[in-house]
Length: 399
Ligand code: PMP
Image (tube, helix red, strand yellow):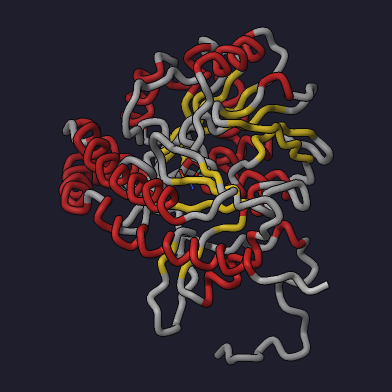
């Protein structure tokens, strides 16, 4: 039996593992606040339970097993459940050999990094970027180089080539909520087409749009040349199913398959068949509309409350889709100090510095996810945060 302290004087099993290889804190699981006030979590970049199409997926899973049980309940091809792989290939106008369906899109990105990165490789990333991508880079001892962003996304004039690749989240970015403009997408597509730079385009939020016109992906604009495109069903169907995919050159995908087969033999066929059933029943579009409408209410509540409550000098992104807004606190504010106070008062968010390589930015910024919190709680949480921010700003600094 394992008892507390069963490790005795032996080193903890993680001792000797480099800091960047330890498990990242699992914010999806959420920190549990046990104080008297229920915590409002802007840290959880996950869908609220009411956003998940539970009944529909129950029907789809049953239908998938009834139709194709002996296949989906066995090991399958490492590239993915063949009919889903074909559906994806058709959607992108590519050969099925150019598609790798993985257990969530992060797994595909992780495989890609293992194949493309060496110790010391430079990767261009947005500043800020998705924190788990930074952890993958650190695992390979690669050097992420942040590219400055503004409200139109990353600045293509600031790309410092050469690099192993550019990693970009062009639409409703995690963490900033910003979207790369069409003009900038075209410029990146041109660089990719000309062979000047490989672009890894991670676009899981693309369909979670609240208004305005959809933009073409960099992959489309480049005619697929020099771009690897990553997509996920996590944000538009369910993250628990763990279904995402990569589209890229057939030789690269074959290399990833070789690594995947050594790592997990085959992805979860049942989950992939369930997603396919959902698609074939025409459930995706209405579900995306329903999810986007609910997220939009939450986004509206957040932006309205920012406007009403936040002290002067604070600025924020205005996402037109996705899960996240980004706050730049008034100059001189420390997001870590705000977070420590906020947690005592039952509100959490993620410190902006988590989305930059260590020491390279974000200490005066915060990522606030509105995806998990009801509109009423969004208002309460932002109002609490604004009060704390004002208090912190008015507390004289000891000299
Ligand atoms: N990329 C980005 C930008 C994300 O925000 C996420 C989810 N937080 C992922 C990839 C991974 O998603 P999944 O593995 O569930 O497809």
